[in-house]
Image (cartoon, rainbow, N blue to C red; front, top):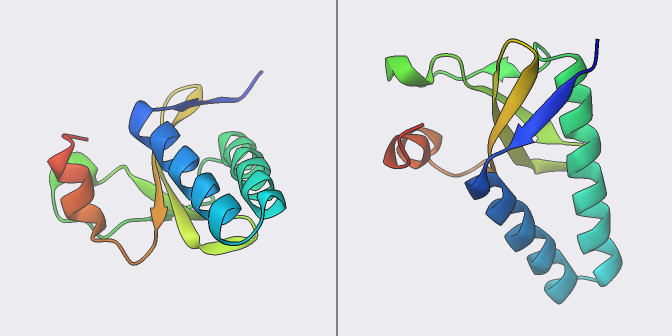
Length: 108
C-alpha cells in the first residue's frame, strides 16, 4: 500500500513563505533545508498518521485535525487531517499562531 500526502494551496503558500524567510534572513541553505525537512516530515506522517497530537480546538469540524512539528524546526507545525489512504496537509505555520481562528477563517 502506498502512503501519500496532499498539500493544500494555503499550506503550499506557507511553505514558500517560510522557506523564503529563512533564505532571505538566514541563508539559502536553511531555506532549502526547511523545504526538505517539511517534505520528509509529511512522508513520515503519511506513513504514521497517528503520530501527531490531537488539537484541543473546540469547533466540531476541527476535531480530526492533528499537529506535528517539522523535523528540525520545532516551532513550525504542520496542521493535517488523516484521511482513508492519505493525509491532507492543511497549513504549515508557527506554533504560536491562534490555530482555531486560522483554520475557522479558512473554513477547514
